[in-house]
Image (cartoon, rainbow, N blue to C red; front, side, top):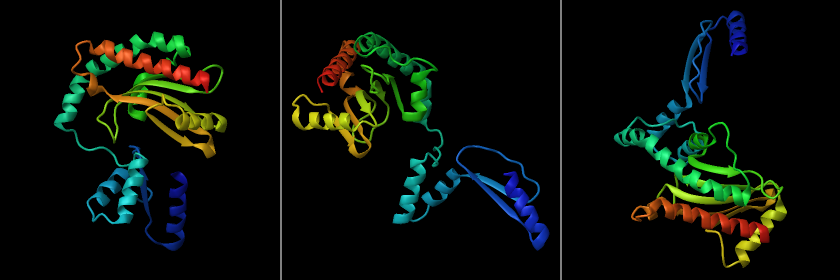
Length: 238
């Protein structure tokens, strides 16, 4: 910022004209500049302005870009937000209990999951999920993850999921794709980027499917356990 101010000061001195500095940021980052006409704002303001305009293809694409870069900001608090905040501790406690109950099976099948730095909570703001995972299996860089997906565009969230992911390994991606094409006992979903050697395969089901069950907790744990065992069998037989 100091370099911009210095350049503007030189121009003001040489050209005898007023100078203006505008500073647009993604996050809240207050600055105080007195040497020139200074004003700062966030990309959220830009998003809100264009969101009120006629939605041309260009504006729609720009708004989508800002949303994709998390520059759209967030809306004001609502009644739904109040209810969510009121019950968030209870919800996290329940998810923790489920993950703790299945952690033994996960560890037996794939080794101990990553468990440092409040790893589950950090998943929420970054990926909108609450999960446990390992990045290594059988001496290879294979990620196995399970938990709760808190947002989804195609099914009613939250979702239970068990996922396998690997990158930079075209041979592995090809094997997963072959599994998709030839195996009857498939994952629920697959995604491939073969040029980059990336492959995802996962099971998922809406949590709402378990709400009417009397032994809800046990059924959820059993769902996770069965899918984890299927994942191990698939990886060991690729």
